[in-house]
Length: 54
Image (cartoon, rainbow, N blue to C red; front, side, top):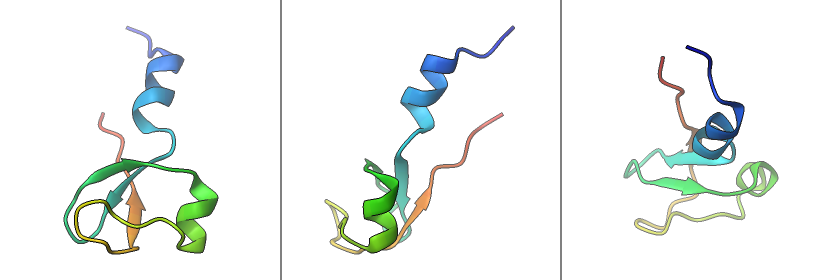
């Protein structure tokens, strides 16, 4: 079964996870890299990209 590109983009593009509280958040990559985005739940600025499951 093939992967649907639109669904992959919706689920994984511009989605980041807070390293402290594991909250998922959608934001622009450049804003995350510059540290302009804060977590809604804990207020930290450290994020990682979401891991794509198999």
